[in-house]
Length: 431
Ligand SMILES: O=P(O)(O)OC[C@@H](O)[C@@H](O)c1c[nH]c2ccccc12
Image 1: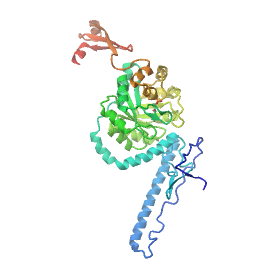
Image 2: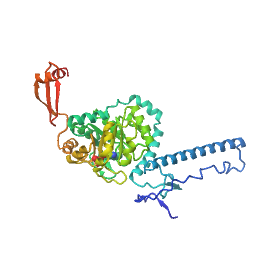
Image 3: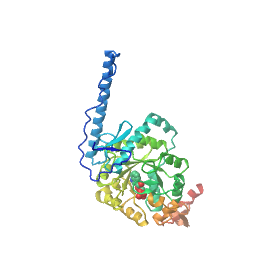
Image 4: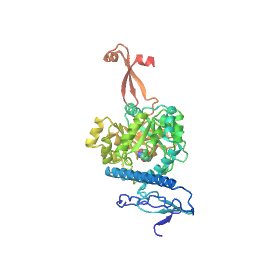
């Protein structure tokens, strides 16, 4: 029985060079009930009842066929946009049960081609189970008790302005498929508080359990611990239900990955985010994805991932490549904030992506690994970027007041990073 492999002992390796997929075979044997009366020597059901049963079965089969056709069409649309990730295994789940044994019938249609595809297939199953436990209708009710959302983009802009560095989104990350466990003594709330104290503008919390050892409990705990930095829910979104769930669990922003989601999904999901008061961080990795996302109205935050999620290769020059020329100009015109993501370890790395045009960075590994993740931030920027002691008064003069068209004395501040700003003494007295 070639091709049948026991799942208990075998993990199917990724195909390094995907063969072109013969786009999906339509299942031709939707399970028709072959003989409804079989087993009864003297069938007791009336002919009418049998006809009714047969017509229900037909309807179910028709629905299954329609559903299958819609899915195949969606896959084709996605492929036409250059999306290589298939949302579900085209030939159905690989596991089959024969008596007490599990078997995997291995073929190209049920074997993920890379880790991102594996995560997405797994997420699809996970979400459909979660949806059964908490349907959208009940999630919508829970929205009433959700904490208010905070301004994610505003916090990044403010930090960029205040420090002169890209605003930092610091990631609460225990592990990843490419780097394994990053930190053994992992207390998400403690790490979040240390990041906030160290000057992070926003935090990113991984919620995927299977591959990143994260959780929605972590997100909820950080939110409930009174951390003020806005929170990004770092998920693999394949269904709008997840956006509602993230909002209920206290997220202020959520990740949408262009390598996974076709344009229509991104449009629809960014609208849902707006409706819920969430910011969408739309992540791209190559020029094609960037162009697709730039053509979508209403996107205000784009992340450029320096890590290829299919191969794990990291190259920070990817950020520069995607911001060069007309793309960079369009981004400026549209006033979009760009986040440089992944593989940033040193002040030189930060300077490099800042020079390329980012106003924010997303960093995990290099800071989460430090015994004090807050101090890790100072190491990353080569400076203390925390709020404390960033300003000192250097002058207060009536001349200044005249320059501002008022007789109220003005205070001139210079912060530790060399930024000068003036505030009227009346403002200070009031606060
Ligand atoms: O740990 P790093 O290399 O600093 O990377 C952080 C973040 O960019 C990375 O975790 C990430 C970026 N996009 C993602 C999408 C899914 C999971 C993880 C990610």
